[in-house]
Image 1 (cartoon, rainbow, N blue to C red):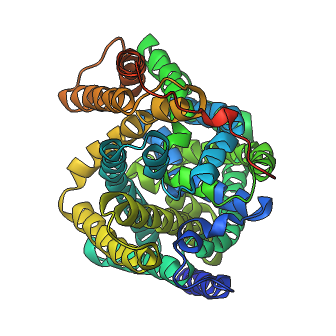
Image 2: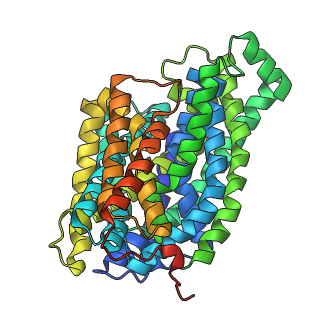
Length: 472
């Protein structure tokens, strides 16, 4: 029954993808990549939430607590809560920049504002470097969902199935398909999390008994050291400010039809935090009742199989799978857009949609192969991906607020920050347990400012986006 429900949900999602096509313009790249900048608050809300609460939430969050204790859950919750107010003020300005420059990718912003081909290439290559492992993260979660249903697929077959479905989504109508399917995904995701969490609370007779029992079984319910506190606080700060630098988040913002639409959607996003008590309950139930799970990422699905009937497990697994597929689809779109617009500049705009679809296939194939053949390397890169995307933040803030920023200054800052982040990560260097990305950002900002001041003399100052008026 679980398998039938799971397959039925995926088929229904493909039907929604076909229906989303509507009046899509065949050769219009803006329609394909950013939905013609036409999404209302309702669609934007679900699409944006779909990128925030992905398979990493339903699979990775309980798995992180299961493996690493309370400190993992605290910084995960903290950075998302802090990211919302940051996004409320920053997101509309990013949209304004995109509208002003007719940008469809993050590198488009840098290309148009600074009129610099080298800076455009630097930002494009930075985005592509860290988007490849981000796709691998979705594949890993999808393999977990498939295995939980008893599909004993070899990894190569599992990632092939997932990649094929993600490609079909974007091939049909670009970003519109993930936007529509995200509504179905969120209904399933939210329902699954509440049902499994409630069952965990009920099985162990309430909140107090759940945590006291977990503590008796050796589970961590608090920080274990001052280093964990330092790391958690600095990670919360860094990831909250870096979150809206993710290329696929920027693309989602570009789909909005106005700044006001983004603000309205942002106001309601914190409501999704209501799911986390149920995810925490799931993690601690697994620690008590299922202490010998080989892979911590199986904690959520394993708990659902322990507590729920088969048909509900099918819905849970389908919600998890759709979460990963939608993020994978949007990431693929972003990679295709960056390659055809920012890496190869000779492709006419009316041909960019077609070539983007070719690049999407290549990106998915590369991610599949690396997922299967180099999982340890890819996992290291995933840990570093946040560090890399975060180094774009000073450049984005310069576009929005600072008229004396130069392409050389922004590029020097990105190179400095990325080099420090990669060096610290792969060399295992830690400075007082402070988040590596935040340390890199602390070098990035002053380098950008100093180099910009040295190179802005006798140059025409740029108009910051905050001073640009966009007609409503």
